[in-house]
Image (cartoon, rainbow, N blue to C red; front, side):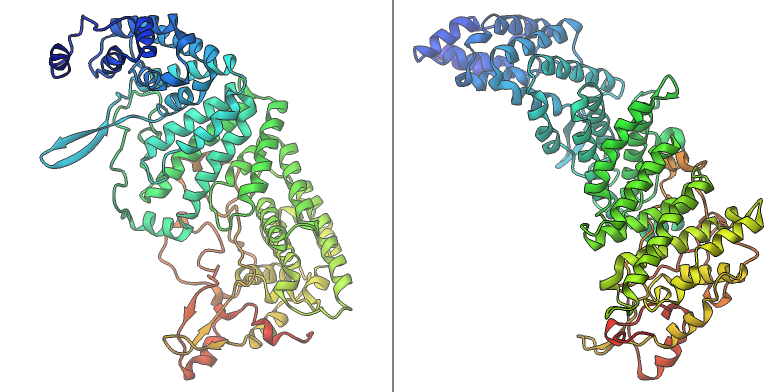
Length: 610
């Protein structure tokens, strides 16, 4: 025992192993002697263990793998912690052989093996102590990362062949090990990259893997509001806290897996937007690669990816309000082939008109449909007209069913899908009217007149009161130009009938002005992420100010922004529904005459038809 204590208190020699063989040690354990057992565990935990030692140990364990049941899990855990990744080919091959034997003979260790492999999907961190401060640093050279990841996936593929239940146990482990969204862009990028590699060689997991990734990306997306990103980027100041960018792993420009920021320009200044930009670049590259073979679109593969993404869209993207970028994965996929875009529009149309769907999802589907029709440059005008031929008759049928009823008054809670569809139609016409009348003005005008927009605008449901003021004003200018309908009388009447809500609060009386009662957002508003945004430059329809439409000058707000930021006519026009402004008794009249007051008055004042 004295010799044992001396050994335990001294560094182990690297060329000598101690104790009995593994087989003999396991036999001793059955007799109650655990001395050699603990000795083996100690030697396996040696941080300076050499390649030859690892190979010898693994060969011994392989020879008795059938004896390593659940009672020896601590010993197996020691073997699983061996630093085999990035070692010599002999070590890697022997370790893979050991994993194959272990999983084949003892399936109880499937989960620990999977956890060990997944834990290596991100660069390792070590703590370096300088003075009394612990500094986190990378334990892996960037040049070594691709090799380490390849070896992990080689092991995973082998395990998946030996254990058919791998896919069932793998997804919970992938979810548990997903890095916290505040981790560095590099860690998130590596992990997502490795998850998508799994989706390639275990295709049955592709939908679940994409769902996991997109759910995490949506968390990032809604944490970085559009206005916040614009403010940070325009001011050139980083609004970050804590450890943002503390672990930047992109120093080695020769790394095949390096972040794209060192290649494609400067990173986003907003830290969350930077992470999201990195992940969007990885996801969009995966979508493209999965849909193309040798540079040509594989229609069947594209259909499979579309089916996966549209299911995730229904489950995650559609119910998520005010996401700015993640939904562009659908936009990008649909740009590959017109049939995919038409299938997406048909899917949105079915959601919109389905009475079994919750109204909030029907309204979201209308918002997606209008924004997609307006912004997708790859959609030809016949497709846009075909969608309008579905939307507009539906509006007329809705008016027919409501005009003579007891609910024929302006009420967002009763007619939300109707108002959202009206706004989708108005928004589409604002962007597409010029293309509709180009080439054959007479035929284009005849089509616009056939939509009978006047009946929609003049109906007792009064959609102009509910739609965004920016959309309403631009639509009014365009329809006046083509003499389709005169909206300004209704807009002025709605403006006069805009009444304030006075309520008591801690700070005294206040006025709630809600000019966005639909809580509208346009899912395909301008894309703000720099690197991944380059993929959309040729397929995205930017807003072009019409020179021939006289829009009320009072609507325009003076803004000190660059020409590049003047992309959307809704900028600074979309009000926030939760904005509260203090009001003094003498300011009511001037406030009600303000252009920003155009919108839906409180429901309490709308209990009669107009």
